[in-house]
Length: 104
Image (cartoon, rainbow, N blue to C red; front, side, top):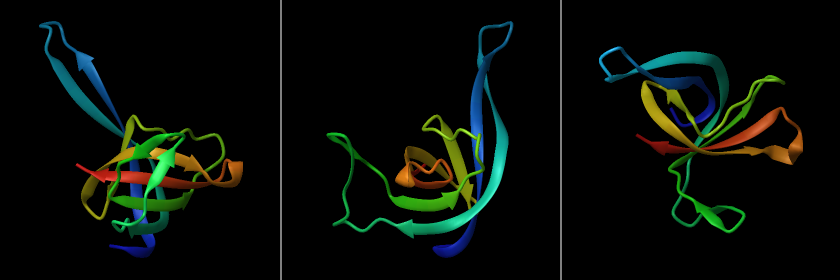
């Protein structure tokens, strides 16, 4: 649901190789957080240095100090899975983050 107080679960996906050489994927939930979920309109562009960030949504949230969230993780919001395209540490506070999300 777009708007205030959306609930999100951040996941870490890991690929493991079994004895036969095939890979299997395991998903582990890291944290359940609440925040503001917004769709990015066509006229809003975001950049990381000179590189354009390609994303469909933005999720503003508070993340506990000491928890590292990065682009290798995914998130689930209202039953839909999103890839984390970029994580911006707002005001270098290490508490308030802006996550750019792509629909999977």
